[in-house]
Figure (tube, rainbow, N blue to C red):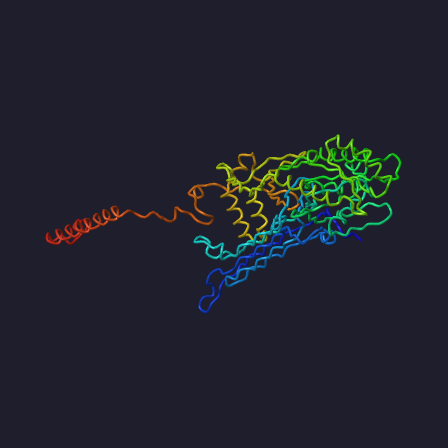
Length: 506
């Protein structure tokens, strides 16, 4: 049964948003006291967070499907739905998050580093939030938005200062056990380590970590053996140590040929590696360890090949992991190389916050004319239109009218006209299986609509203009002057005795 997993495919989905509530408040003597439907709660996010206590991805190997809690539905009396809590998944330090196509989404290094892999859906608005002076009692509410569903690949790249590389059974695990408190599996028969082993080494006042990378063989960079599964664990190591077996009994093998084979595999792997902000893998400091010198024949071979290795500019140590010979000088030399690598490393800088404001002419959506055989349709893509469609209850005519008003205000109809759409044309909002398809019936523009009034109103029937104070004063004076003139004319007629109409005199 596997106890160490460094690569998994995680299927994550955020929580769904709760639906809004369409409710009317009813009181004594007030059977229709106004809308009081509450909003639905937002769904929770699925978040990856680095936890120093976690060292493997085994948990997600057994349970790869994770779903965050959903928000609850709103209720009457302005009661809001509860929010879905975030689902925080603990991952080891050095986890790389990739999309299914291989693109890197996040590199989680350092305790507490987080990345949201699946966002929760928004909660729908209740009819209390949709009410306005023109729409005093909406008979509908918005639906909650479904949470984001996403498949990601998690890869663990061990973070260590020193990486021990070499052939299987070269003594790497024995060396880690000899210089640290780690206790990897060690046996007296040839086998290869299946799990990278980490050990902490104390050399004087210096402390560093050592990783035992499982044995490499020729062709490891092309996927042979377990090469590609564990070559990623040396990407973050500052120092590489070649552990060469001087007592091997396999024909055609010797320390020099083993070194050349491993170096060629590292160079081939480094050619496909994209490391930003770090020293290239082929340029990192190296050291050669000639192991198993407790065997007389191995000691003779080590003394024979040492001058040639030093001629290549490599620092060479003859050790025996079994008898602990030469381990103390080795650990102090490693500590010096690690200190030099740490000093040469670029200081970590906080991540910049990049603000990308929306362009002035960016409408937030696009309308594209598409053809497939005899079929012609117009596709509308954009965050707002797609979200509005998902939140619309199409069984409610009032909700559909509200969606039409929102799309018209956003400018979708204008863009459809410019794209060449005609009444009855097929329009698709969104992409994939969640797209909404309908036959377009544009809003008929007449004099009433050109006045800019909302649906169901006519501004010509109501004059909302307010006269100025000077205009009201002038109107008042004209009215008073007219009254004075009328009284004077009436008094003149009364004094002259004319109380009958001219028609009666005739």
